[in-house]
Image (cartoon, rainbow, N blue to C red; front, side, top):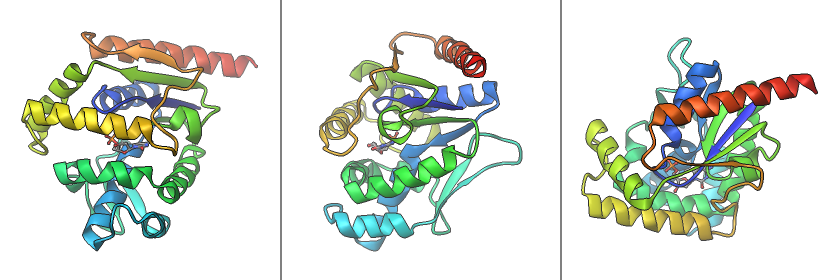
Length: 229
Ligand code: DC
């Protein structure tokens, strides 16, 4: 069974996806980390973020591996071509590079193929931007998680302060969130959008625990529905 959790940056997708996966006994796939890893590789190799063909070749040949602790459905890290980039993909430099890299059609094709291959292997909570619309249009449950720009910026600042990675300047983070939403929503390839059959959840001013509980209830209903058919 696939649970797709899409939405803009900072809406709480990662925390919600991880907690739901743990509660439900599903694995969890962070597709944004895959695009970030490809962006990191492009920057390392000096490939221009506008060179779609070279980016596509890079993405197709890249070996992306999620690192899991024994028995933990949530990855603790990610490698690309053997480099552990768990922290390196969360820097402001990669925040900027990842929008154009993820807008490149050949990159999206390569990532979509890998994500489908991974997701076909079992029960997954998959978070991203186009999971319910493009990658798994038949996902049994689709969630589109949003929050106001200001709330998302505050959360990102707190998260960056906790991890010690990324900017903690509120105005800078807010501007970056708005810029990235605009880029993700207006691109021609698989833009950020809610699937017609997605459940819209606004996490502004809401306890994250309530959202997790809500999604787990929906997941159990969808699972029961699937078995009944
Ligand atoms: O979720 P995130 O902020 O780590 O995602 C990083 C970037 O990758 C984001 O700018 C949009 C892009 N992305 C995408 O285009 N499609 C996905 N399924 C996941 C992320």
